[in-house]
Image 1 (cartoon, rainbow, N blue to C red):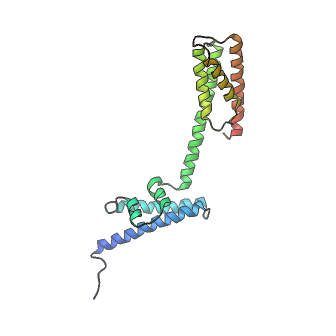
Image 2: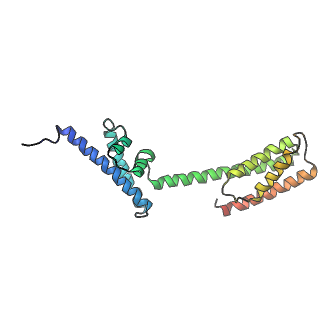
Image 3: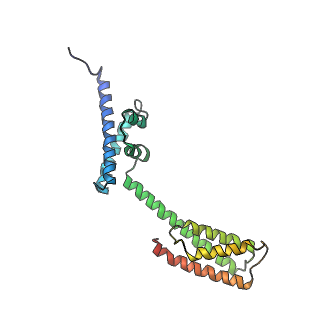
Length: 209
């Protein structure tokens, strides 16, 4: 007696699609591990992943009614492919691309903070030249400068400019808002700002910007 394994063609196609989805997830998991272990080159890894993600997107779109959740499919068949799940479902791009984007964002962020530091240095120095020497005028400028320097992680931890700004902020915090810097204090602060600015600019190339 002949036993029918499927009732109709649709069930056969469904099982084939399930098997293909299973295979794509497994293949992606192996690919991720091979890349992490340096078994394949970044170029080979990226090319293979692009093929897998293209098949995955097509198949998951075809199966969206029967497999609404890839995570549930993964758990149902006890696949243990967390790396593949992240790469296919959450990220959608190869690790090589993800790393390039992260690196570009880091460089862009650093460049923006460097520009902010430069602007704060210039503003503080120009304000002193305009004889803005009251504590409530000077303090916010030095506070902004110190804050921007703190955000720039490429500077050495013992950067002298940051140390000097902290000393000045501590000194000003003990004075009244309406108090003014003496001519000698204003001259010293101007000197410290200019020397700190020069040190800041000199530190940038060695910091890798």
